[in-house]
Length: 111
Length: 132
Image 1: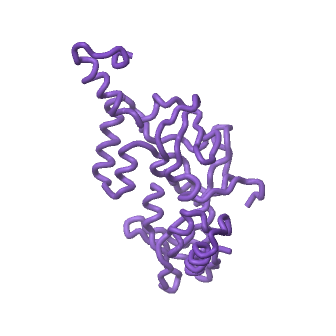
Image 2: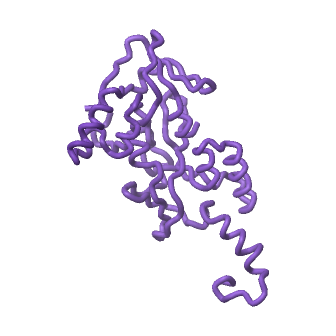
């Protein structure tokens, strides 16, 4: 699967509530050693909802704080965004581009 | 999560970044990333995908992208998919991504190479640079 395909998936909670589309994903280099060179890059969180533009411009998790007016707009956008842990995913449907979360999956908001 | 592990945001830190080969030569951009489901059920980003075919695929011209990719590999007589670069070969990830590969092994300049070999070199009175 390409990142393009992953970013096209819609995310739903177990009770059918739509959270929006995957707009970003976080990668952590803590996987198993590959060819004795480096650790593998594991995807650990998906950013779901309308925070895609904010994340692409760096207005995510407080990386960029100014100019204050733009930062305030993007902070508002971030509040509509959910962080989903990959371990909370119950089912992938690559044909319908759909991700269904486990019941009780924790939804965080970017700080 | 290991607290010393490097943390990256895919679209912010990886996609569209400039690629440089082992000699510092600019050799394309990160046009897409390959994601694989591992046997342990986890998802891993395994490859950087570069080249015109990857870009077309990302821009939702998927058939054209696959065709461009096949064409590029055929031109280079390559059996493996040259547009895929293992992410572990990225020696440094910053504003640009430094790779432990040679630019000649990548599909970025395939079009130019093909034109030089099949067109420019057959033009009479071509300049010295074309022969080089």
